[in-house]
Image 1: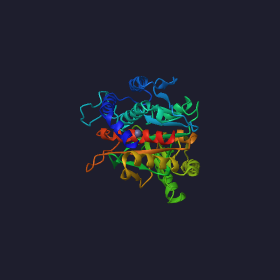
Image 2: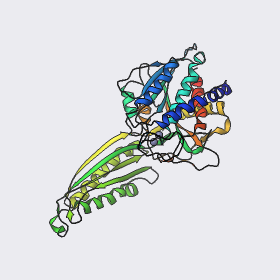
Image 3: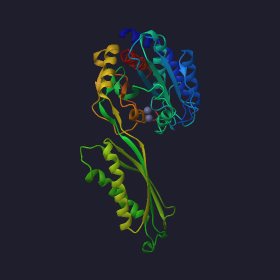
Image 4: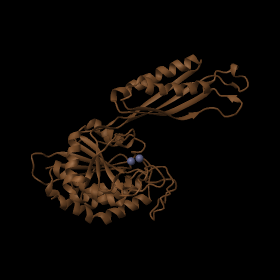
Length: 395
Ligand SMILES: [Zn+2]
Ligand SMILES: [Zn+2]
């Protein structure tokens, strides 16, 4: 059975590469993936996959019912993200982006092609699996908003999902390899804005001001001490100030300085505590310097926590379809974030795994860089593992 799956995936390779490169050439930003959505819908319609209408103009939700008789009747969801990034492409490939300043620099074009490949293979072998496979083509992963929308659209209910899985390309693994990690794999992502309000004055007479710039500088340094002095060094957390805005002229002390940034964290309890620690420090420092403040903190997405049992099934599916040496346990979790965690909060029985895309001996490409490109050679591997997983789960 398994060799058959990889062969079927390889037979589709040419067709899927064509789709991938077409999507690569016409990338679309978060929540604007109209053309991409149309292509996906057309492909799924050809396969007889039931498309469930969404309120959103972008994103696709399709169902495929297995015909194998079983008392198991499980529901498994597979998710691909479909959005591109605001980057001017410089990869130099023939099918380089024709959309100014927009680029598939995170491999989501490849994820689409892979999930379409899975739909193609499974729709040709409905008698080999039972239950339901849900295909979720999710918009707007890069802005961490699409998963929430798709959950609100009802992709996890009617019928409710037992297991959910997504893959993401990974340049630190060679093409053909699969990477898995048990437990907390990616950090939560939250964002904040701190407005520090003082009193403006002439730059020559600082004693007439309440200087928000000096205060902001103290706040920036003091916030870092949360990580270095208040958190166990074995816990993983980051506070990054990613922007400072204030002042317009060399001789005017402004009234307001705005800081903004992100908090990333692997420990769900620590996540709440960090917000409180930040507020305590901002309050203390601004008050010491006679400024007032406004602190806005937005909890965006939680940690990606991978279920070991589902990772075991991924590893089994990869070994069955690709061979023993193809599965690697990843050395490190990541401080990056993924809104796939929004699904995992509702369906903890799931995992987010990695698909190698780097040719042996070549330097890994950097995602979110203008020279990035998904490696088409990886497509059949992704198709085979996900397809095999469905055959193993929906028995
Ligand atoms: Zn990305
Ligand atoms: Zn991505």
